[in-house]
Length: 592
Image (cartoon, rainbow, N blue to C red; front, side):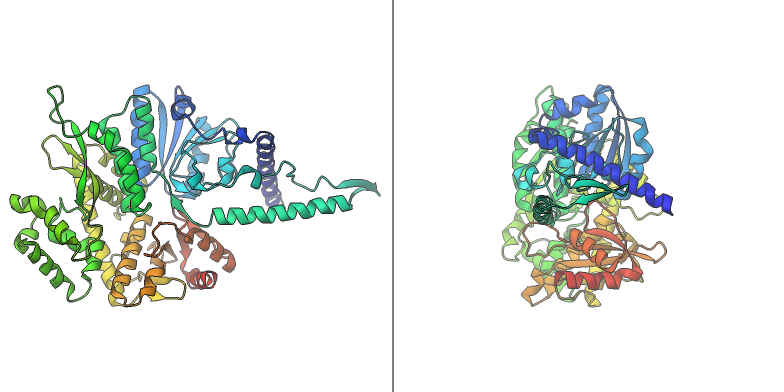
């Protein structure tokens, strides 16, 4: 026991010494501390990877997969050797790094690791350099002000709010109070705590309190910045190796941020507008030298309905959260109101219940305009949005939103015979236009997931499972729920939580419910001993900032329970069922 404790202390001292060396060298020249933030993505990042073997650690989300697809295309053109490993969470990152770092000198992390102190957590060898491309915020300040072993490729802007170097580190930092004088007495060293030393220590204590306050304010909320896939596309553009396919990957990553509520709609609109010129280059215009089956891109107003091009219009309306909650389809009158809405549009129910592609051509061409004309009357704000589409030859247009839904469904496939790595490769392959059958399978899974999600929301509302516990709303998917295994994954559970919150607010007369966030739990189903917990911000919050990451940490510390992050977003954690009640009680007192 003593040897284990001694080795842990030695490891902690080594980490402190390494960080102290970084702080002191950076304090001598603050510009050197920030020089490892990549300014020239081609020179300082990509050219460093040439003629090297790369370890590519990619988080299991759509944006990260699109980023890796762009980088892999560039690697193939330059004959760069790489090893790609899917990463599910922090524990997986630590283990994968430990198992594979001995084979490489350069590591690229995509959408994983920027929120954790990488030097302390991964303990990389001194000759290993870690490049980080990550859209998650906030960044760990030790990564931002690293002396060069960690290099952040993602631009760090004033919007990120990183505290200044001088407010976080001091040149006189030390492992011990070495400033105190020492004297020999009886063969032992004694410290002389004179007035000057005590004044320095008091000043140091005030400075540390201010530093802790700055860090607490900086790390209070978790959020997302610009998508990583478009950063990778900018790299291809800078190298004059951009193609319509690579731009499409970037736009799919951007669309994922909107659909999964990682960024607000206004930020999506600004990013979309920035790339409209690039989309126009690969637009509808063709000349004699252009192949008829090339990939053509477009940006236009589209219906914000789930998979409506691949489904029936009626089912798509029923299972889209915006429409389902506005028409209150969870009540007896809800479906009748939906049928009245379609009748007022002049769309026969027989036509709406068949596949959208099989509808009468004249009616199909008018659907968007008809819904837009009645959107204001039925308070369907947001039913239309600027969307990216791709057309391959003379096939039906494919919306970026459809690809996102399919990839999420493939990533979190509940089939027990598909491992997490298999699901990752399925989602990556679905981006390839030559893998259309796989994309179709993903769309089918997404339709099933939309139906199951809606049915679970209906069950939670009917059983009055959404309750107010003071500072937030709380709901639990019961162990007996037949479809609970669909939500034992971060993305699916988060989507369910947003749907439940919107549906609950739509059915409540009290306006206070709009001001409350929601915590949702579901059994993991392995042995019944653990559950997955997610927290989502209230509907009244315009910015999708989430405070539950830090709140979960503090609640676990209060009750001295272990929580396991299931994602690099701290708002999704695994908690033991025995600790769940105490965990929620701690959150109630913490957020009161």
